[in-house]
Amino acid sequence: MSWYIFAFVVLIVSLLLISRFFTPKYSKRVSIIKELKQLDFNDGKASAYKFTALARELELSDREKRLFEDIFEMLKEYKYRPISKKLDRNVIARIEIFIQSVE
Image 1 (cartoon, rainbow, N blue to C red):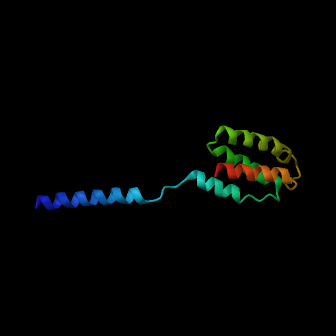
Image 2 (cartoon, rainbow, N blue to C red):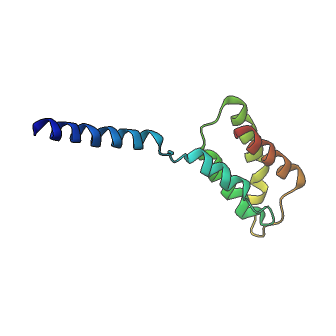
Image 3 (tube, helix red, strand yellow):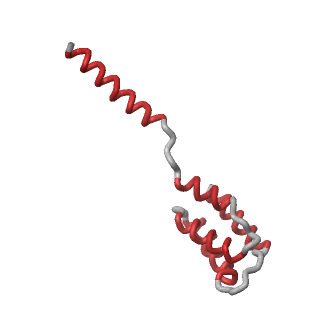
């Protein structure tokens, strides 16, 4: 009788470990990149703040940090204006390059 209980406990523990091993893990980086891809560039101020907040949450390599710093400097003119305008094509292109580099 005790062997049956022992075998049952071993079976349950092994099933729990196997299910934990095969369940997909939540990736914060993937969700941040997904949000970056969905940015609306028509509202310059909102997209500038959103891009900055999301990009700061990522762990960046040296190259990506330099790209971010360049974009950050470009976005300052959109952030601190009372009236927001659409982002410039050059800024949008840089943001898209940044998103491709972090993927």
